[in-house]
Image (cartoon, rainbow, N blue to C red; front, top):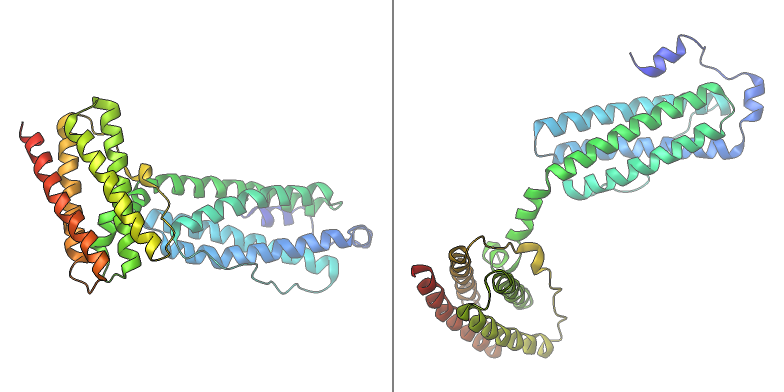
Length: 304
């Protein structure tokens, strides 16, 4: 049974004249804010349900949306009984366009709403208003737990998605490229190589092949930095650690090196199909040729 329907069985839903006098302007404004918040949540959670990747998540989010619709009805009834008029709800803000950002926003909003509703309940003098907002706060806390669960559940897929948009993989997946985009992808890939070599050296010692190629990759970074400066571009942030894992053996380290260079060569070959400024073409060609040499070194290490 809906808790609000249950409560109405024991108390007719109206406020007596004493309660009307006691409820102040601050409470009325808070209830307006609560109505606007519920109205906005209803709109955003419909969008969030459509973005959800599984039927389970879609169904649960729509159940949460139904809770918000019950809250909206209860709060509007309270507001009407206090003021004598219904409040016309207003959207507070736009909805995030991605499932991840939508869940992050929902988690924060639900937690903040719990505190807000409990503050209203504590400050209200009417017993019905206290009970309505306490019950709503309990619902909102439950919603926050569900949204957090879905966020944690999807972290792995988001990490893989980010990896597909970083460095050579991002460049190879792009349908079209500008020179600035090429430079960013190239630098990201060099960052990624450095992070990968650092982890390998840390775990397996000063393996000569990786030490030598790491030093060569530093020269690649320097060549790319020159192009960034020449074209007035800021260097991209180095987020490579988020996309790098530690190989479980030296054999796996060589295999990762092979795959990294294959992707790198394919990226530069794609870049070189474009009409590039001569200085950019020279650097990309040099880095492609160096990657071919590195690939040979990693293949030999893998064969040993």
